[in-house]
Amino acid sequence: MWFEIAKLLRLPFILSTVLVLAACATTAEKNEKTDTYLQLGVRYMNMNRLEIAKENLEKALHNDPGNVQVHNALAFLYEKIEKIPEAKAQYETALKLAPEDLGALNNYGRFLCEHDEVGGGMELLNKAIANLLNERPWMALTNAGLCQMKAGQKTRAKAYFKQALMMNANYAPALLEMQKISYQNREYWPAKAFLQRYLEAAQHTAESLWYGMQTERALGNDGLAQEYKNLLLENFPLSNEAKKVESVQ
Image 1 (cartoon, one colour):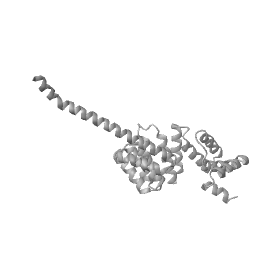
Image 2 (tube, rainbow, N blue to C red):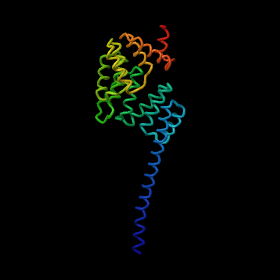
Image 3 (tube, rainbow, N blue to C red):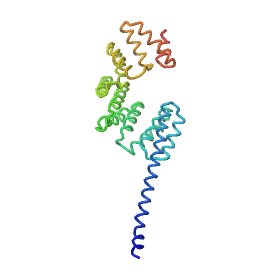
Image 4 (tube, rainbow, N blue to C red):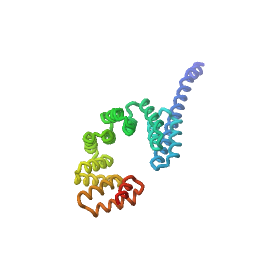
């Protein structure tokens, strides 16, 4: 009899344990499903297959509305398809969910700067830069430099880019910006050196070719300038830089 009573007393504990294990399994499955949709969304976005990317990110959001990374990725996608109010709303949601999230701080800070909200953008970027847990501060530093360039503060921008390169000497976006600033300051040999460093880390862009062409012309290297010009017209025929070349031919 006492054995039967003991068995009955154990039933609530056993049932609660089963329910906890079931809940854990359900949560794990949910997280795995969300991560799968998120990874697919980002992958398709990188491939510029934006409609499929959007479908996967929306599935991830439906599966886990409180996931900061999903809101951040969806905001970036909305930027790419030029749905600016929707992008802003997603970034704001991400930061409400996790005010210290480095990805959201960096991306939303950059976004605000690009849409003429320099003060708000710099506040978020400086917060990301100052966070001691930030393992890639050069990204926020470069975005801060771009923000200062947009505000017409070239000297401040240069300081941010230099700081970014002190932390990561091979960070291509910062190298490209230093190439441009050096050329604009008529520092042609440093501009050439920054381009060479940039090409060790990344491929040519229309901008790198344009500034490379102008730099070599200023240095009297007409052959290399022509080579850059040909690459620009061949690889980026629809770019603004190619149009500028064609307009002066």
